Length: 238
Image 1 (tube, rainbow, N blue to C red):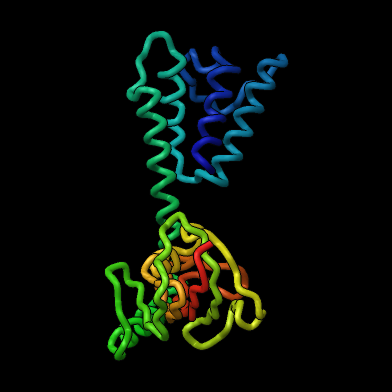
Image 2: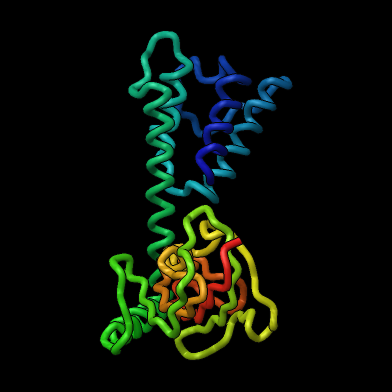
């Protein structure tokens, strides 16, 4: 569950049912049935929250959850956290859960990641290949004599993109039509390389996944954590 969703749920409780938790919760084997509309709505909100937590927050500590509600709603107690601190705790929790999920998902692609890393490691040893601090590698096929574009320029290029196994995933060359785009509107590997290329140049780029499409991939052709290869010709600065 997203942080905003949880805070919204808690907000509904605080605004709509100000007297529900003003009295200490009693332990009882038998739950008293609601006798009026307010009781029914209050009970139903509890069911809705429980249903959400079961799916999105299965490790919730119910006792502490109730303690938090009581401390906020009771006139005789002070919450252990301020509203800002409470919100921060929730945000940190879900950030941690997201990181855990990403790490678990990344494990599925360990072979892909290693294959890309090994490729770049070996490629860096080849004559004519330059490796930048970012991890981007390039090879100059032909050098132009024109100006170099800046980050905010728009450029016209021809390109031919492949995976490290040679599979073509996109090619303006094959389509026979160059493409124009802002230098800062493409993947990081392209943005970095274009600012180093004089107009008229043709370079071969070897782009690690961190500078390409990362853990998401792109479409059906570029999987998560894919290392990419591009032949890029910088035709002009528009």
